[in-house]
View (cartoon, rainbow, N blue to C red):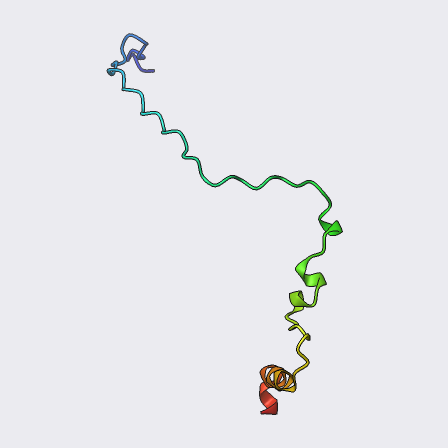
Length: 80
């Protein structure tokens, strides 16, 4: 058994008080956040529900040159 004294509160060395850390600057105003929408997302049409969402081109022209260009663009490499 040891006869050494256990340190008590008076035996501890006190350090000088540390200065308080600087307060952070207030946040800078940025762009406004978009509003939260709590409606059902399945009620809206997505881009996948349209032909444009699948990469379809508009067929408004009906031009044979445009059809040829589309055929050549979409032809698989093994058909060259």
